[in-house]
Length: 311
Image (cartoon, rainbow, N blue to C red; front, side, top):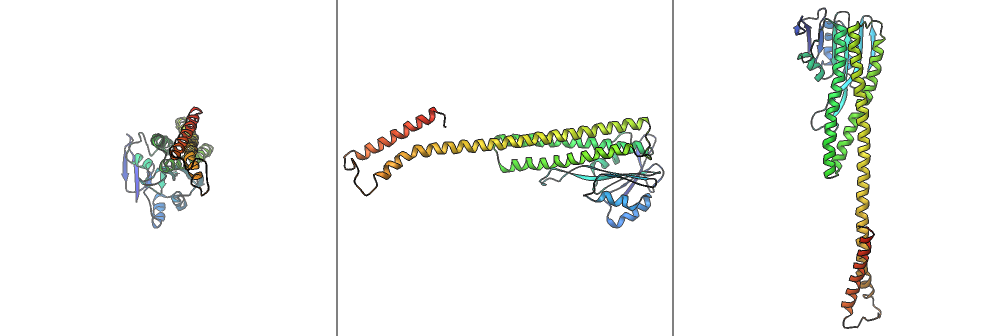
């Protein structure tokens, strides 16, 4: 499916039947057999349309005559039930002499916001300005996703404080994977955006330079936040790992103490259960004396353990 829009004087998007000067082409999840059709209608190389559809495509900049392609990775929230809450997906932003094109393998929320006019002052005829707005929206979407991840970390932390189970530990591990995806993608995105500034054909006026600076600041902030969350989450997991080991040591210590205390009756009973003569075994009160002796020894040992805070 191919949507083509052009903004009016008020910045409202008007759908077009064909690509015109100053329009925005927005293919939605195009199939392989549609790529040549989409490329011919928009007047861009078919490789510029195909490459961002590859889930493993790395961020990069490519030029072809008057066409400029920038691929960046943006967050993608996974469906409920998926182990890893967030991954990243490539988005291609193409600037030609006539129009701007965005392409992604999914109908990404960033592009939905633009098409639903939730992004203000998106003028398609101002190609560089629209290009930079998309970068800024992408950076802010990272920050929004990081806020959501932080809430998930807080919720998992509360659950772990109640009871340390494997499920909560796996939740933290999967969140850590998402932060790893974010940190890697943001680092490369920043490099690509800095390279974009030095592309001769990517002309920016003073207003555009402000937008680029704002996009770089937001992307850097998202990168720093991702690294901080990643470090804090690693420290949190280490702390809970140490807590689990301490709890295990405490349980083993208590069990060992009770084993020692309970050994006195067992030792005395084992000794007097042997098939050879022992002192006082024929006495009238032998059983009572032996039981009392073992009880006293156990109580004294327990009191000593309590005094030295063994349990």
